[in-house]
Amino acid sequence: MNPTYLPNSWLAQQANRFAPALFFIGLVLLWELICRFGNVPNYILPSPSAIFMAFFDVEFSRWLTHLWATLRVALMGFALSIVIAIPLSIGMMRSQLMNRVLYPALIVIQSTPVVAVAPLIIVLLGTDDPSRVLITCLITFFPLVVSTTTGMLETPPEMIELSQSLRAPRYRETWQIRIPYAIPHIFSGLRVSITLAIIGAVVAEFVAAEEGLGYFIQFSTSFFKIPQAFAGLIFLSIISLLLFKSIQWIQAWFFPWSLPKKQS
Amino acid sequence: MQYNSTIENKKVTDGSAKAAYVSMKGVGHKYDPRPETPMVVQGIDLDIHRHEFVAVVGPSGCGKSTLLRMVAGLLIPSHGHVSVFNLPVTEPRDDVGIVFQKANLLPWLTVRKNVLFPLKHKYGSYSASDEKRANELLEMAGLTQFADKMPDELSGGMQQRVGIVRALLLNPDILLMDEPFSALDALTREQIGFDLLDIWKEHPKTVLFITHSISEAVLLSDRILVMSKRPGTVLDLIEVDLPRPRSAKTINSPRFAELTDKIRGYIYEPNVPA
Image (cartoon, rainbow over the protein chains, first blue to last red):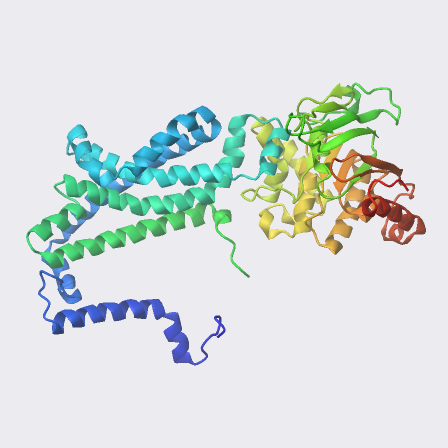
């Protein structure tokens, strides 16, 4: 079978084009059918229609409050981890000593489950934003450090020789060659980190919060309002997807040269 | 004025055409100082004179590029002496330009900005007159219409032309070219060879040209250093007495065939003097 085989009838073409959407719709329908005809109670597994109705059980302004709380923590944590990770990577790339000292520490931080550390951070920093932002930052910054460092170290030796042949100062080698070269790597790190940021924010809300989608899901579950919890989960997925997409848009808008070349 | 290093400023001011711009005496190199590690290149003696075009040919891995890096000041030889304008080479110099293999352009800069990159990188900024000079160089290389394009929008041959123009920006007296056309297809390669000769006529430079193409070396250069396989030593230094300007006709001349055959003899029967 030729894998690039294209169906030629109009119907088959449309089916092929919308296959991912059709698969998704089919899955939701199947779920609905199982819930309806299998007599699954709503507090065990709510049907898609019940989840949809649950959106309207909560006031719109309440949704916005929760959404904003989660988004705010996620973005602050993400921003903090960018501010920490990129200078840290530059430092580790430039200084062998810094690399030797910091790398093991980073590995230790990364291998410690943040979920387990979260309650301790709350004890340390209190139940307000700073501890939630720190938890988010801890979860997001490692992929950024790894991708930035990798990108800078993978700079082709000829580009470095070009810099050396000009006897340019080292900081310009970093700013004008290594960092631009690392942009595609940095963006793949950012894409991983932004989705982790949502996870971080939710983890923090599970531990201590009075608002936010993570808090809302936990709260709803404890009152057996399972359809509402699912509705909150859908909001989480949507903002996570939108954030992921916005990283791609930012890259395409500001650094179009860094995108993989289209096969023509 | 940053890049106007004129010949008058140089130690070599005797005005004679035979003054050595680049001089190598007993040059050898090994990357590891332990006695058991082999030399990469060994016993290289070569003087390159003002506005001379010298090519270095040899099999892959014979240390041709190592030689170039030593003249460039990117690598300090473990044996012997390399000097440029009678001064030992201890670091890269402003009056030596390098054209790298595979163009080595920065994909995030436009063609014009790539050409201006040496100034931007070395001094942090460039002036309007620098920009004018970049435009003139681009025009000379027939690249004006591509000045605002990104490097990946250009063909390999065009990209390497940009690489050459970039090396000319600081107006170096000496141009080092490290297998600059090896990534190009045969037709483009021949064309860009003639283009290089045109550019060289307009901007005479002292050139050290590394290649593994015998015909390219014969077509372009005044003298050819033929190197043995590793450890690279000098097998012969051949005077190319073909008249200039050279063109496609040169390739068909009997003398061209004689010279290429002679070099080919060294490459295929290494270490046997002809």
